[in-house]
Length: 265
Image (cartoon, rainbow, N blue to C red; front, side, top):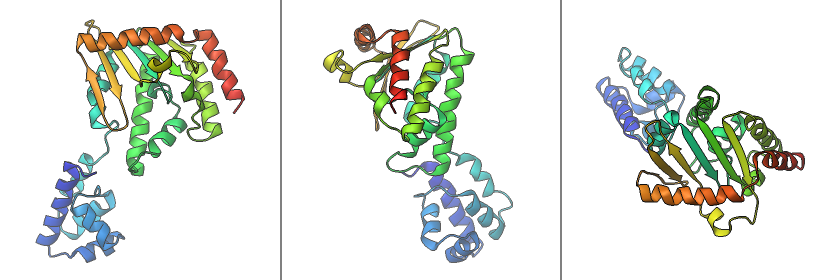
């Protein structure tokens, strides 16, 4: 997926190269890339690498002007479509998360998050994967830092059996859930198979409450996401969450259930 900053930076490399009379093949050879790879970066189809900018800056006499563009090419820690939600989450006084098929991002281990993000389609480059893993782990600091914020998680049983990253990663992830669930501002519940019927299978969502007593609902899928502020929509999802939570196991029962699943891996 092309991005405006990729196209702009790649276009600048091309302009400086042509102005300096440097051929694309010469630049490619000096940087250690093939011709088509450099062409893709100049056209914005690929993110220009630090190596390309360093070599182009030197060969074209740009005196740091091309290299300075690297700061604006760093991957964002979150997809653009989720930025507004992340800002609200960081200041929320209550977060209630229902997860259908995956462990919630706020509860993921590094290994689980890396395996999940690394399996994106189309594939992400290594730098973007690492930045998004880092961003996800940074979000989790709020669970320890914001002790006055209530975090409630209901996880459908299917998420405990997905095998993300393999048995060892899953085992460590499940045990991590039992550890985080001991914090006084965090509750983790499991919704077993067969409970809530179709309501449980309609998809994941998150309810937020801000310090100003505003209420939001966030719904995300692999390709789209929506942040709802409409009182009727938020109210409908709050009712669904209430029904799901009533059918879930209690906190202590859930911890025992999770430990049992981990032992069986």
